[in-house]
Length: 401
Image (tube, rainbow, N blue to C red):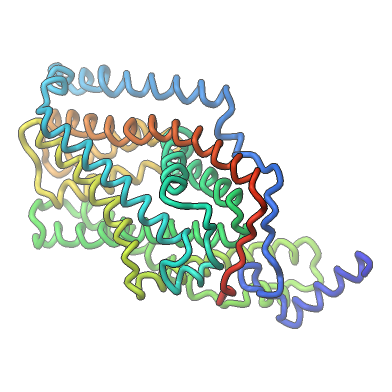
């Protein structure tokens, strides 16, 4: 068939509504040939790494030495050095438990055999991915998130690359990453809504003003509504958009591409909802990821002799974490300042807030980053081993989207 005839055939299928979203079509095979696909180089160039390390060093110097002086907290560094070692040891253990929850959730969504909804995500995951490979992918992704990108983009890019090299198709990876992210941040937003309303009404001890309780709760509720709305998009979005923009050239192509992207996003969100309805046990990994990490912050407060109410810790933690959307490596500076500001808004002593948050961030930033860098090198060797093996193409159940 000539190129012009192919283009005409595509348009006719769009107009007839038969051109399904890329995530939905059973007749269109997924592209699984990874060839010599390389890891996202934008993350790991020498100049970018050097710039990141310089930023991290300067940010840490500011946080640990300059900020306390600006706040008039002259004994902050001395107080950090004399924190209770047993509580710090507990904090390290809790952070490891948080990582385990992350790996557990990853396996529940990306490794076949967990549930019916796993198949609905686009087929089976590669048999190449076992616990060691799951650890390497997740820890390397966490290190990339901490060092290189805002809102987890670095970790997503690295994870997608590793999954593609394991043999998963592009659309399968996209749907599963969307479902994974939705489940993680659903816990975030739901907790923020419940905790914010509970603190404001006095149901949860800790109090707090409207601005620091209800406003974050409203934000969480809006995010939840938006994602539920996306999940209800028509399944044949490309067909609908194609009929509306038929014959408009570039607008038609752009519209169909956006519709395909929205259909894939809706597919991932619906699959995440299906896993929740199914009560898939691996979803507890998302609760463990957030819960144990918050417990690290709680332990760091106790290391310095006092702790605010648990509801205050939870809300201040999530408010601070919103700064992860800023283009700062690991949210350094943004997350710290956001958490400290939230604690002060709740009436927690400023010096106690500073030392506890800085101690927590030492665990949250460095504990995954250093092992994650090693995991990245291990992952490179694992991917090379996969490349030397006979090709394994993943073809599972058809996608209901």
